[in-house]
Length: 219
Image (cartoon, rainbow, N blue to C red; front, side, top):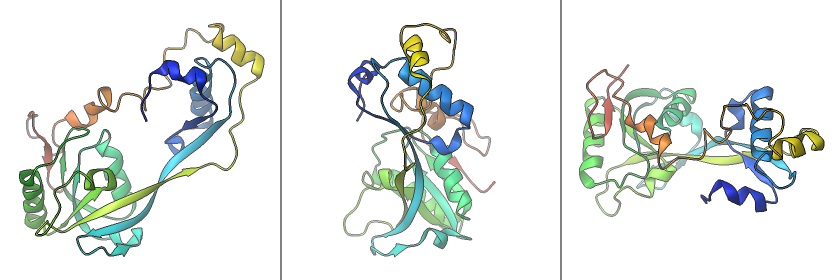
């Protein structure tokens, strides 16, 4: 699903993810930044992630998201923005007892899972991971129990209001607002590179940064 920015010129519609975190002005700037790279104005749709349910592995039970309320959890993830996973779990009422974060696209090993399970056991908590990470975790008979937070991508019903077409043509031609420094793709494009800075920060518990995963206990 990743393509160069030049591919925008042949797009027939645009989808802006994580729009629930953007205010009206930020959203407008994002739209104009994208349209600047387009050969013509196209419909723009806002989207965001919404928690759907919690899958229990290996039992296969499906729990409502409010089942996390008051639940002590240790987070295990290898995604570009582990902070958003942690924020979502906290918003659902989970008590974050610890975290083990790896770089995006990390290939989990049995040792990784064993370390996470040990962290959870020591904290009297359960292991909670993302749907994206679950498919990369070791499975099969004897696999450690864990909870998986699953999310849906929801769309705003109608296309967003676009700036005036003449303004878009000016932007596309490199006219007004060319001095704008903010890259409208800064939040979304480099999940394999730049966004790994989230997963490269030192542990929350203040211990020195290492080349391995981040680990932390209760705040």
